[in-house]
Length: 184
Image 1: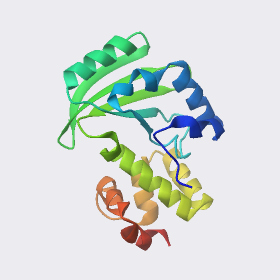
Image 2: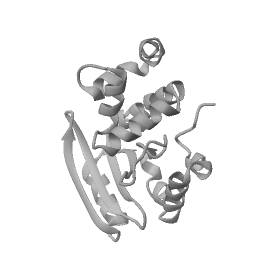
Image 3: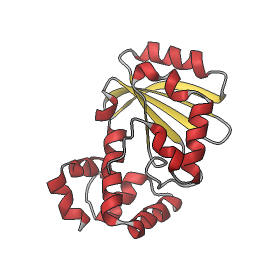
Image 4: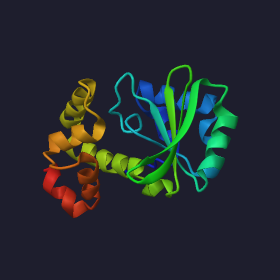
């Protein structure tokens, strides 16, 4: 069964950290607050390859970065260690807010791209499919690499023996027929 990552209800029956993430997101009303920006929780926690210091990444679609930044400041500035800034990532205007809650560091990330087309979401979908195909041993290897300081996409690329930029090479696996070469 394919997991619906647009609805965080799957976290309620997940591992302990996923359940804690669900509770924290609900307690702080994060997704409701961001609803008009089509938020999606992405990253390692939804697919169960997080390490203790993994944050909760929520991607959003925003057309106007100054308006998005002002909104984030308005609704989250009372949280611990709040900061918001805009930058360019891979040539794309991006606004990022960070803050801490009781158990997590949140990172809210906005681009003028539909959330399901943003790289964070696309990477997570590809990684989830690979984890399902390759099984628990592969999953544990990814977690071990991450625990040793290697970021998620480079960890997958290393284990799959992908050459080049791990972020772009992983996106090339989006198509099933290409992925078949690497998941056997």
